[in-house]
Image (cartoon, rainbow, N blue to C red; front, side, top):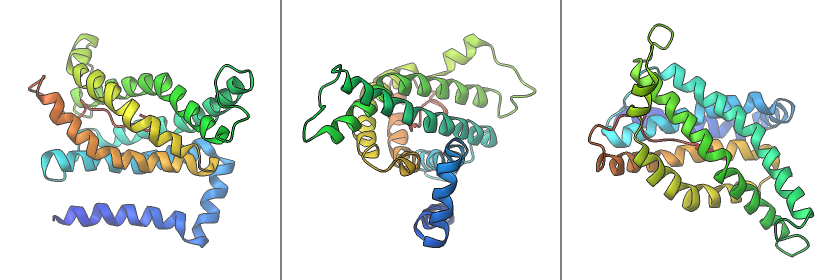
Length: 238
């Protein structure tokens, strides 16, 4: 193991402790309820970025700081705020659709599970892919600019050509959405609302391992696969 492994683990343990220790838990939960978008930004800026670093560690067998890391952190934060917004939107929408009889599960013993499942499914087949696509393009732009996005410009043709769309549709959409994110977010929506974005942010760390695997899958079809070619959701969402 490398020293960076211990540093990375120490940061994760520290963040987790903040949400476990009673002295800080109450404060963070209060902030989450009073400023859900701001806390969504903070949680993803830290935890999803840690997941991205993990993915590079697994792929490169060493700790690598990607180009424009500060911009990547900013993008993750923005996605976190969007996810914090979309969670209640899709949850309320799923419940409304069930109440109108548009989705099954109302009035059964599994109604709570059904709401969580339909919320997760609707979010991951609509908002999820569009968010992951936007994130992939933003990562490609940051990478092609070498992190200097304020002083360099990239053509749209070069940007689109740089993205490994085979990996995106074949692995990220075709594999992780139905087999990872829908089940994982179903479990997430069974948790109290104030914990959902936090759980989603921690899930992005777990997805780091899948990100590394997805990069290897992509290289079979595109020899020059870059660090920004495989989506982390989000994340997250995706």
